[in-house]
Length: 119
Image (cartoon, rainbow, N blue to C red):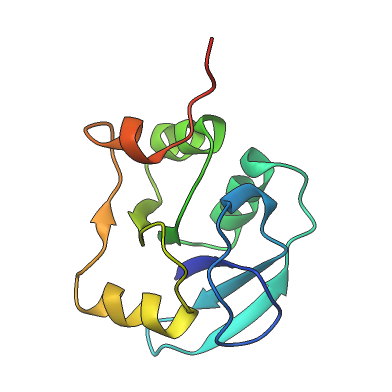
C-alpha cells in the first residue's frame, strides 16, 4: 500500500508539504483505489507507527524531519520516495510513481531532502 500526505480531504488534493503535519493521508492499493483518512497523530514518528500498522510499504512525500526518517530507516519496511518541492496533485504524484519518476530517499541523499535539526 502507498501512503501520501495530503493538504485537503479530497481525492486529488495537493500533496502536503510536510509529512508529520499533514491533516489527511491518501492510502492507495495496487489497483489504485484511494481512501483518505484524517491524521490525528501528534508528530511524525507517531504517523510512522500508524502507517506501519496499516501495512504501508511506500511513502510518497515532499518534506520530512529527521526523527520519522530515522524511524522508517530503522524499521526498513517503508520505501520513501521524494516527489519534489513544487506543488503537485495526488494523481500527478501517483502517475510519476507508476512511471518510476520519483527519487528514492536513503542515506546517500537524505541530507539534501530530509530536514535535519541544526545543533
